[in-house]
Length: 97
Image (cartoon, rainbow, N blue to C red; front, side, top):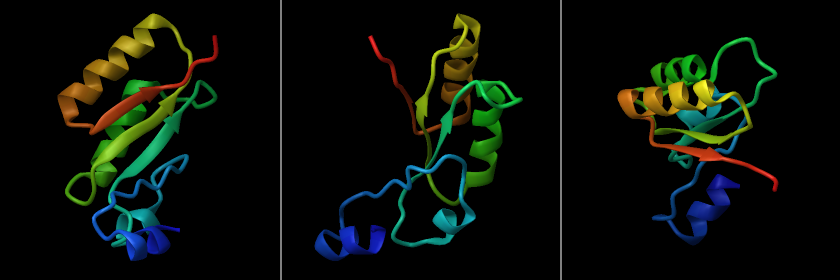
């Protein structure tokens, strides 16, 4: 899909939108930004996962947290603090009212 998007508009930014950093996305010249989605079904905190993923993508592609789910307030605070500290390109929250 990234190749198709770039064939229409070479200046259009493409994010991989994956659950986890994919090495293929890091190597693909048609993918501009890598992402991960954070939910509480994993053993690490959101902040630690952000830090780990930023290290994987650092110097290769911008990293963004494509979405993250509801969690205790301290997990949000720690994630936002880590994301700002380490240069994460963005953090998006999903919520149903």
